[in-house]
Image 1 (cartoon, rainbow, N blue to C red):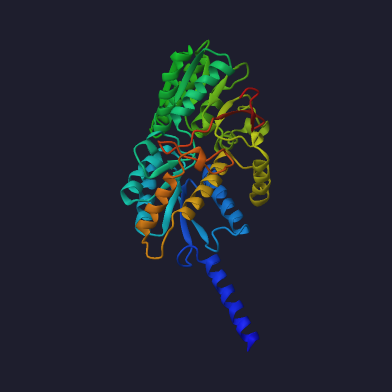
Image 2: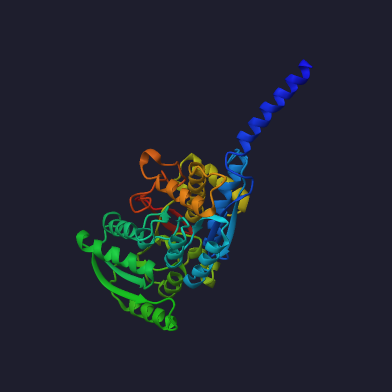
Length: 399
C-alpha cells in the first residue's frame, strides 16, 4: 500500500511538472508566424532561412516549453499590389500572431495600412523607408531607416574616402527617393558637391531608354565624383555593366540593396562577370547592417550552422530575420497569453510586448547587435561598409 501511495504521489508530481513544462502557453496548437517577401528570389529565401534557423535552434534548447512555432510563408514577389492581397489574406485567416516582412519598403508600406487597421503586429528586418514605422505603431524595424543610412553614406564618402563630390543615380520609388533625400540634405553640411543626378522609374515602360540615357551621359562626364546609387540591386547591376568599361575608374558606393545576395546574382547574368568573378563588382563599396567577417564568436558559430544547414553563405538579410525571430519568440513569451484570449487580444498583447523592448536595459542580444526599439520603433545600429572582391563583400579598410 505504501509503495502504491508513493508511486501515485510520484506520478502526480511528474504530471504537474509536465503541465508546467508543456502548457505554459494555453492549448497545444502550433503558434503561427507569417513570413512575407520575395521568397523565390535570393533575399526572400534569406529571410525564410534566417527565421527558420532560429526556430530550429529553439527546438534544440527546449524553446517555448513544448509549444511548436510554425512559419507560414507567402511570396509577394516584392510587388506592393500583391503585398496588399497577402496582407488581407493574413488578416482574414486568423492564424498568424504577427508578420515577419516584407522585404522591400514599397511592399511594407502598402501592406502596413492593413496590418494597422486589422491589429496585426509586423517586424521588418530589411525594409528601411522611415514612413513604415513612423506612421504605423503596429510596425517595427530591426534595421535602421534610410535617413540614417543616407547620412552614414555621406559621412563615409567625406571622412573615409576623402572625397568632396558625388553624382546620384536614383530609383524614384520610396526606397530610392528617401535615400536620395537624406544624402542631399547631409551633403552641404559636409562640404560635398552634388554634380549630377539622374532619376528613373523602375516600373516605367520606358525603363530601358532611361537606363541607357543615364549610362551614356555618365560616360561623357569628365569627373562625376563618387557615383552614389540610390537604387535596388538589379537596376544597379544593369547600369554598372554598361559603364564599367576598360579604362574607366569610377568610385562607386551603394546602400544595403547592393550588399545582399541579389546584387552578385544580378551581375552573374553577364558573361564577363561569370568568366571572371568581380569583373564589374570589384572595388564597389556597399553599406550593410551586418558583415559576417566582423562578427564576434557567436556570429561565427552561427555562420557555420547556417552553412551546414543551407550549404550557402548567410547574408545580412538572413542574420536580420534570425534576430527578428528571436525578438518574436521573446515577445510571445512576455505577452502572457491566456486560454480565453482570441486572436485579436493575442496580437494586441504581442504588440505591447514588442513596444516594451524599448531601452538598452530591456535589449535582447542579437547577431546584429543589441535589439531594442527607439521611439520610432526602429533599431539604430551603426552601419558597416564592405568592398567587393571577386563577388565577396569584405570589410573595407576604413569603417
